[in-house]
Amino acid sequence: METTLGLRLETLTRDAFAPFGDVIELDGARHFPINGGTTERFHDLASIDVCDAGGRPLVSVFRAQPRAWPVPIAMMERHPHGSQAFVPLGPTRYAVVVAPAGEFDPARLRAFWVDGTQGVNYAKGVWHHPLLAFDRVSDFLVIDRGGAQPNCDEIDLELALELHEPIGAR
Image (cartoon, rainbow, N blue to C red; front, side, top):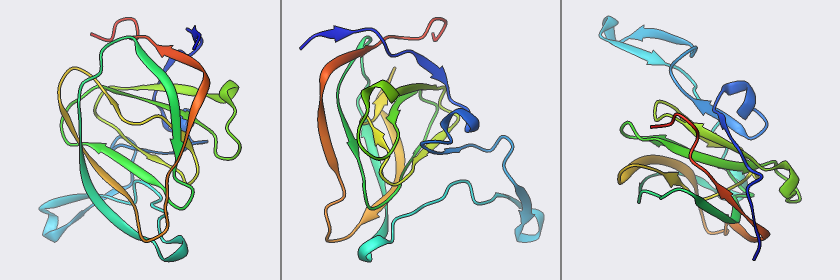
């Protein structure tokens, strides 16, 4: 399998990630006090979409092993029947590699660098690489779809890519 260096990391922003789902972050989120003013609620941070064909929400923790640079990108997956949200449970740097829902097009791959203060919610059917955490073993709260119907398609890439550490990331 040949290797190319054609995938660059972008900073994760709501606007840049919008074609693929939601950025889960407190900055700029609608919020208001609850519980007699003792708690601040940051409201409706992602569009969780898991109920097709009798699905139900699952709440899990994924423990990611740290990756070493450069990271090979040789496969992608998607969940055709539900969204999938990842929220780091501590400060951890990670990357997301995505392509739009529909027929997979490697020319439309994008990669985003996350500093650990944001989560992501992949929209239903969006292609993405499995979890890419760095620096240390890292826990993520994951909200996705459960049910009897399979909800994961995987493909191997014809041309593997390498993801390189962003300049100034340390």
